[in-house]
Image 1 (tube, rainbow, N blue to C red):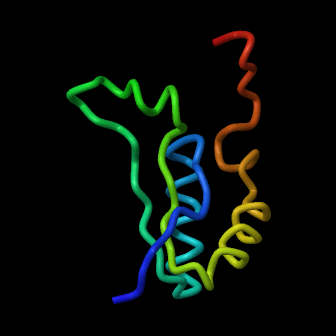
Image 2: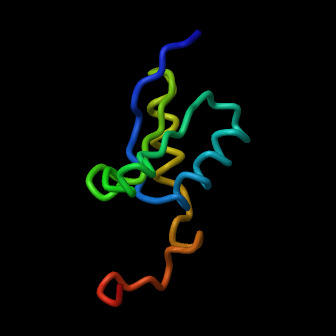
Length: 85
């Protein structure tokens, strides 16, 4: 079995689902791990981000490039004003 390492930190579930979909389409081996823990009511997500992408090291550059090219503003984060939250 290939060894996986942390590739990047995801900020929210929208990023996670979108990236997972693209990586699956391209047959890139990966795992997405959420930091959510119901026992701690999501406290780790507030500190560390939503979760991480784990993958074999040889796919790191490809995954980072795909992540940078994601249309995140069109995926539901557009129009969200952080000052109104």
